[in-house]
Length: 371
Image (cartoon, rainbow, N blue to C red; front, side, top):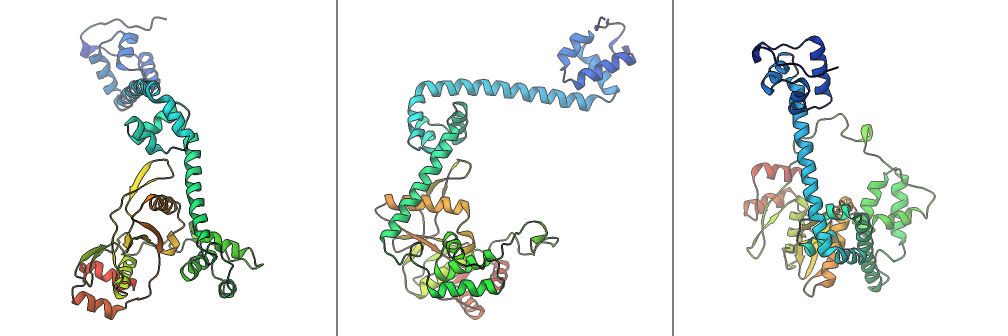
């Protein structure tokens, strides 16, 4: 069968038969471009476009055209990327392999070849080294954490990670289990009161027959399931605090404000941290973050106890520990999750009246509700 059709009459007079329209729709479904349709039907672009519009096939045709353009662009981009990968491999291939073998991070590869992290990751995938890079990264981070743990051990048996459990800690645990507290709440409070990490709490729990109730916050178990979010959700509390020496610093949460107030009350020297710490996130991307506060020469993070064991915070902590180990000016202080000197509404109002706390009215209302 001859699939081509003769050009007859004026372009605006040309009509397709039902068979021709059926074939046209089939070709469009298959993703043919205007060029291949012109060759197949022997008609001009102008005629095909008119017939496609008249028969309600324009949207489908445009979609296919966009898809073809996208695929072509991606193919060309991939081809160009492969050429760049080959160039990098030729110039740095051996050095990159050696770097990955030694546990180099994605940032190290980027620095070596002078490219972005996304390009470096794509290159490692191309040469089959990305999985090894991820494994080595984890190994390096674990090694750093182990080194810090050993350092803590050398500090003495009283370090919370290594000492024996006290009778007070055991009694507290049993009491809360008997009261029906959920596991996450017990562990969070034991961290606040005794400085015990989640792993250490798990170790304590394994010594008793009574286990805390595990609790899932998914689906209907979530306390907010089926409820509208509260009005203040999604809005952090922030403002400025005027220290006793007259300097003004920025706070980003009610906990930070309480910490600054507590340090001031105890006449302890402190300042906002201006260090930029490099770390690698769970996707292998190199990132930086700024720790919260420097107390004398020790760097601290201000975090609620419930957030300390979050994976991203653990990665940041390990990076900060490594930085402090290599630094001659700063030491790793840890986390600040509670304060000695709390303040109530009266003190809050007094501080604001004296312009020791500078905060917008809406933020102030949220802060009062948090006390």
